Length: 169
Image 1 (cartoon, one colour):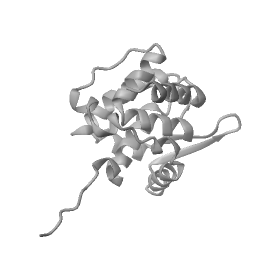
Image 2 (cartoon, rainbow, N blue to C red):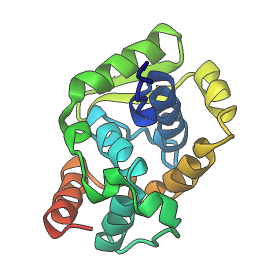
Image 3 (cartoon, one colour):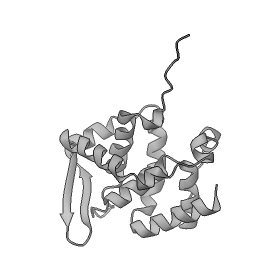
Image 4 (tube, rainbow, N blue to C red):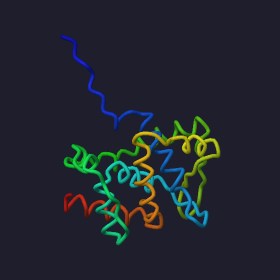
């Protein structure tokens, strides 16, 4: 009997690059065009957008409006048994940023006070705008709510996430 491979969609490279493109496209700049996405913020936002139950708890801690989450998104193995490696796997994020940069989708800038700040080029924005079907639709809704946390510092975001991890879902 042949064994079928077990595919974990959340580990698929192109899916993850799509999520990263959506995060960068929507959250890189505030409404006043100030760039705010450092590597630490990207990592925290990526974690939250892929775990909507955590996102809601963080939004509650930050006194922000929560989102309605489908049972399908709430009762998942990933939510019930959280893998926090994404919060600390900087190498994985850097590889994805390098891929986007090699395709000329990424526009990094260096700031003396913040370090590297990331945004998308016009080509990257064009690609991100085409990600509209399937699960990307939900990701966009989650990212909309994340915009209320753009002004939070990376340490404040991580504090919220740590509190939720300690309390549990």
